[in-house]
Length: 482
Image 1: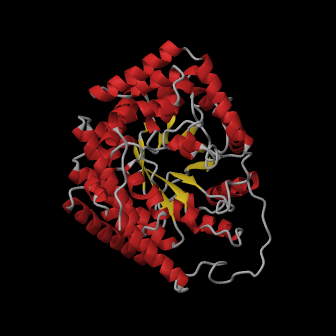
Image 2: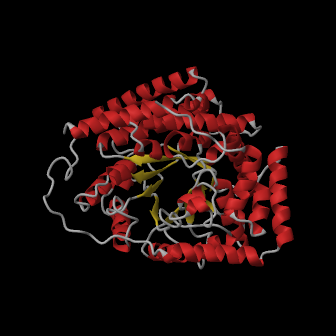
Image 3: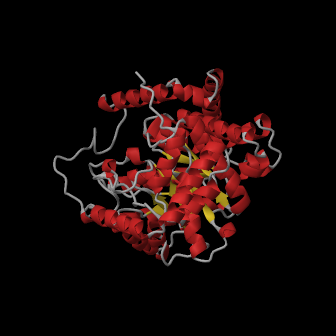
């Protein structure tokens, strides 16, 4: 029976400065993408302005540099925000970047209730796998639940969090660990929101997840199926959510960056196609396909187009979206789904015994499990028990160089000059008052989002707002895992 199912096709284009990224976004939209994924540079991710001493050499290198509302305006210049779905890879500063997006929509005259998209906003996995955290866990959770409450009232179509297993898988976790630790984080967020007084059936339907699609094709399909089934049970039985929409595990998938090889990079096109197909067969609602050159640099225009066309071939030529869960009933798929669920549930039991996910990560339990899995896999590669085509088998003695994307070094200087020019011409009274209001809200327990939104509209920068909250909340110091 035809059930017709497609997904939001996303592609990253953010790099360097906002103008360059805007050109890439318009190019991809013209070529058929149905959603945009915005990756921000490292200073933006950790709440540092482009002229901060620690930002030197990092501005625009792994994504687009955003310091102010003017940068966000340039990023989406000429793009109708009601016509696209925007996914933002941002965590510790998610509240600020969402406020910037909303402020730009207001300047465009858009009804912000019509905005759709996602902020990743998953800070727990930062302590586990990525490291782009700012505040201690309790304070970070407070900011997250403030965002939940504000969007529920003001931007009801916005996905308030994308709970991410992707980065834990990139750090070396197994498929089972990816499911277990992602859902454990999800449990912590839901409990935190309930503890903050929110109604589970009001916020849960806007929770989304973000998974990795790795190379073991059938294992990946089973992984997605197990995660969906487990989350439905957790929400229905543990949290007593009454709405079936609260039980749904809605998820975005990105193909696995850690599987891409610098050797024979054209092979990555085949890897990405297999991973994308696994995600679709597993039920993803949103998909990003990596470009074949991403083991070497940010993608070139040609590489980004091939990645997008890979999705389009799966969507329009393969026939797989014509039915829901097409591998259901396969003996092997059903058995593997059950096995992953059982093993992931065992992990959830251990985490609960430790006092929950925050306690588990503070003790280093989750980090150690991932480190052990990563080490074991690397040993298998080194012993050639795990084959990586073109690396430890079927290698070439000589390889032709391929064109790669290089970020112009002048970009950083130009970005810093724009930021300083903004500071020179903004209204100092409005700017200072807005930051005082952010600090007062942080101290009082008032919802931070309205104050952050007012601050970005008063031309306060990402770094200034982050520093204001640092003053109140402090900074997290990583536990050493041995």
